[in-house]
Amino acid sequence: IDVLNDKSTLRQNIGYLPQSFGLYPKVSAEMLLDHFAALKGIIDRKERKKLVNELLDKVNLETHRKKHLGGFSGGMKQRFGIAQALIGNPALLIVDEPTAGLDPAERNRFHNVLSEVGQETIVMLSTHIVEDVKDLCTNMAILNGGQIRLQGSPATLVASLNGKVWEKAFDKPEIEAQKQKYQVISERIFAGQTLIRVCADQPPAGDFTAVSPNLEAVYFSQLGLHVKNAATS
Image (cartoon, rainbow, N blue to C red; front, side):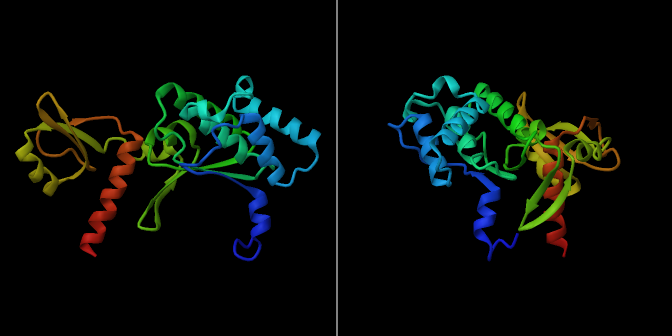
């Protein structure tokens, strides 16, 4: 599809859930979803009613259909957002920062909804939350500076760092020296010291401990590599 010259066809094939979106607080979920369906060209009332019922059931909001949207929690609003994005059965669903601000319980419910939707529709997440990628995605890419720096399945990319992630605790004044010697991919305070993790093909000097890599290590190691290459180019 030519996205510039065939915008109507493009819109018919894409559903979109932005990170922040407004809802009429004094309208019920059922009424607003029916309104959105009419706006998307579903004119037949019986067809709209059937679609609304199916979508509310899909996102686990069936029991809240008569409730005003102003009384919805953050997670419920996100699930409603998925429902409206699925009107018209899009081939591609784009979701921006879907779990930002959700508590753990709502996050789990939303993950379940996205996983179910992903059985029938291609779902693309734009997110900085590594756990979302780990839990939901079969394929991922790291975008930095307008360029794709790395792509592949999360499991494969994590496995590529096996035997390359090392950890050790230092006093804070020592950290800068370690950054000069190694690619430090993370640091956190633990028991009064700074625990750093480095990415290196060989064991670093000193008593570093090998640790299992995770997706966060993949993310930070790739960004660190990009910064290093940019500095030397």
